[in-house]
Image 1 (cartoon, rainbow, N blue to C red):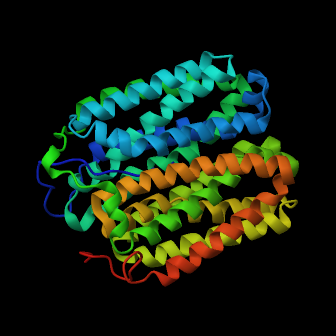
Image 2: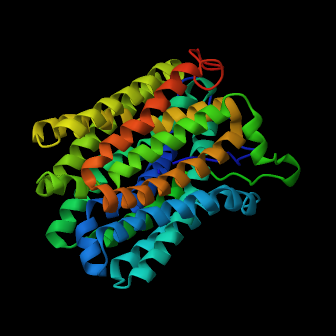
Length: 402
């Protein structure tokens, strides 16, 4: 999530009245989120095989996630500024086409440098996708259902984790990891057709309506939300990027696809709960999300040699992680609006990249058994900030909530 957005849609048609949501465009956007996460995280499920075929170490192959996230984080604000005047649907289509090209090259490349170059291209495309999703979702929904619309759009994230990554891992083991990336290209092409047929177009943003993005840091609550984003995403990606290596250490490498499937199913349950409650229980859900991940980290740190405990920890981790994109995107939008979203995409993806890089360093220096303890050290202050930031960042009642 990768996943984080800059609202740049203006002069859009009014949101529908009443309690109806436009399902086809929202599901198309959810599929775009699915593609962003699948393209980003797929190497985590096939890391040993990918490293072997590219003749590099697993920590080096893990940087394929890092460079993707770096590209997304560093390009988010510049790309949003450079494309502010573009028609929004055209911009979204260009990004999905870039996914297709990058995944095609990854599928056929035998050169590490070339593979990494097109992972960077895909990361820039992801910055565009994340810059559009929340803005679209909020404008397609009536005000009282905007949180639910965001949750539907973000459902692509746990769906990629629950189905896309495990299926990709399975296919990678049976047919080779390259076929998996080729299939992702096919899905991307189909998504382009769906977007053109279903997602409404919007004009870009006029120059006289643009606000300085960094000014969002002065808005109450924004910095607290961004801290939670940074630490939570860093913790998640330290462990998730090298989950195959972690499982191999405990002789569970052959169960990678099942472990990831359980994680993803729990994530889907989490986003369903989040979608139902986020408009009324944002604060409670964010506290619960953090606490569940903390318990999972403790279990993995102490009892990972027990397979049943590992599966339990994956359930708890998935329940914590699944809805976090919706929770934090909703929180930062409440606190900082358009500018908060722009800052979130940069923070999210920069620390996602940091997770891959830090995980590689930790792996080489201390081994995979140390990952859960780094996760715990990062999440403890997250819990303190969420509990303490009750005035603006994570209030008991959202502004405008029924």
